[in-house]
Structure formats: C-alpha cells, structure tokens
View 1 (cartoon, rainbow, N blue to C red):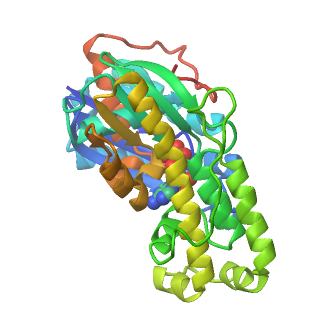
View 2 (cartoon, rainbow, N blue to C red; view 1 turned 180 degrees about the horizontal axis):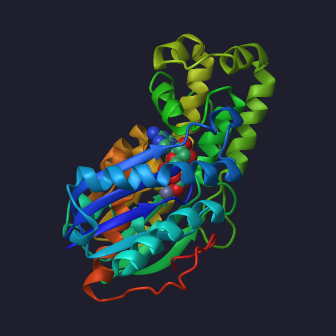
View 3 (cartoon, rainbow, N blue to C red; view 1 turned 90 degrees about the vertical axis):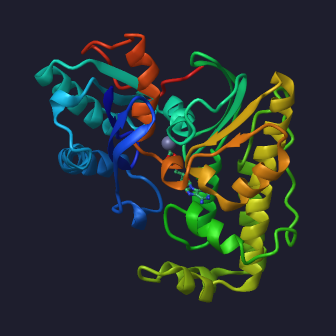
Length: 350
Ligand code: KG4
Ligand code: ZN
C-alpha cells in the first residue's frame, strides 16, 4: 500500500511516497530560504513559497518513487497545527489529487507525524507504553503513547518551544535562521559549564517546560559582556560556512552557546526522565527538529534505561514521509476524511 504524504505546515514544502508504512520510496523537502534575512518565518511569504513549490515537489516525489497516481492507495496531508495559510496550500492540493483520482484522503496531525517518524527506520520496534518528546520550533510536548495510536499529554512548554529558544538566541547573537543547527555545531567548541544558567522551576505540573527565563538570562549576559561589535560583524556575513562562523565567534561566545545548549538539554531530559518513571515507559521517542541536536542525542542515549528512538537527521525535521507513515494505520482501518476536512492552525493531539 503506497501513500503519498504532503506536508506544508511551516516553511518546508515536502512530499513523499511511503510503502506499507515504513519503506520510503521518495522523500522531497524544499526548504524556504526566503525567511533567513528576517530571522524567523514570515507567514505570508511562507504560503506564497508553498504555492510556488507544491507542484514541482509532488511531481519529483512521484518521479523518484517511480509511481503514478494510479499506484497510490491514499493521499495523506498535514491538517495542523501550523500556519493556516501554509497548511491550506498542502490541504487544497491533496484534496484536488484525491478528487481527480478518486483516492481516499487522510488528514494527519503534524505532531503525530513527528512521533511516527521513528516507524520509518525501526518499524515495529517501539514497545508501549512509550514516552514521546516532540521538540521543534513550534512544540515542546511530552506524551504518553499507547498501542493503537492513543496519546495522553503529560507536559508542554508554557512559553517558547525549545527550537524557538534556539532560534531567538541565535538571532540575538547575530547567527542566521534557523539557529538550531549552527548553535549545535558551535556549542561543540565551548565549555558547557562556563556559564551557570538555572533551570526553570515549575509550579503546578512539574513536567511542563519553560525557556523564556533562559532566553532572558542569555540576553542579560550578552548586555553585560558588551558584545555589540562581534554581533554586528556576524550579521554582516554573507553565506558563511561553519569555519567562517567559528572564526567570527570568540571563545566566550562559544562557551555561552555550549552552556545554553547544556541547559536546554537538562531542561528537556530531566522532565522526560520524571515522566518516563511515572508511566513506566518501555521506549522513549524523541522527535521534531531539535531531535537532530547532537548534544541531545548523546545525552539521551546515555541517560535512559529503556531504548531511545531518534529519527535519522533528515527525518527529525519537517518532512512528508512521517506524514505518510502516520497515515498508514488509518489507511488500514479505513479511517478516511471527506472533502470537508479543514486545515486547523491549533489542532491538538491530546
Ligand atoms: O520540526 P521542525 O523542522 O519544524 C517545526 O515543526 O517547528 O523544527 C525546526 C526547529 C527550528 O527551531 C530549528 O532551529 C530546530 O528545529 N533545529 C535544531 C537543530 N536542527 C533544527 N535545534 C537544535 N539543534 C539542532 N541541530
Ligand atoms: Zn515539525
């Protein structure tokens, strides 16, 4: 059974063909570069870029899979959460294919897609109950996952998502957007214990997260250190390589980045460890863009008693193979949507 997945919830236009829920026949991701100079995603720009990219991206995914529309069993599309103008492009395109070809339509929650990304590499391996940490530019959520795709929300961020904290700190320091990958690489060259940031203390649900205090602490540190010159110099750099960034970043800033990253990872994994204990987790899934983080990957593998599943790097960030994977159980149980399916910016999973 082959599913064409379509994902357009934020600033990636993606299409993929996945066979039987785990075999990736193709996965095409077009990342929008237009947002870089604004230091974040501009919603109106994003929908226009999706409009430009959607036809070539889907065509390429079909070509690479060597499939025609008649070879498909269904079309799966991200229903939400995300930017509504961006979601609408994928949704309308998916509906059009289904209408023209008489194919079933399956709406998928983007967060559920992230959780299913691990099924693409290790089908059938996850044991339940599982703990899932979905950590991206838009989400920092902990779920209990039970067999049969049932989810219970355990904790979530009360302010910024972890990826958003990376992006904002990177922007403040004059690095480009998205900030996560470059901060991750530069943090490897710094001392994670150099700057002592305190972890957020949560009233009420102890496994909720908060990153705004950390972000403010970084801002205070930057003000104290009088870093304006080096930040301005970095802002002016044109298409820098990792080596260029390294040359333009003194040791005190590398130490700051390493300390920031260390604190984010502690914030994530301490609360995940409490939740894992509470639900008796037999597997721990970490997914979403921040799951590509090298520090998080290393720390998680060393710290948990149960097996830890992290999607390969290309499958942690937004892609359409995860959307097709999440749709597979729905296809098997005949759980289809009609053309009244609506894109929903605030769709929740549990
Ligand atoms: O899942 P994703 O592609 O899109 C959303 O659903 O948000 O995640 C993108 C986020 C961005 O905030 C980006 O800075 C962050 O993931 N990210 C990382 C890394 N790679 C991407 N954060 C930390 N370390 C990384 N290596
Ligand atoms: Zn995502």
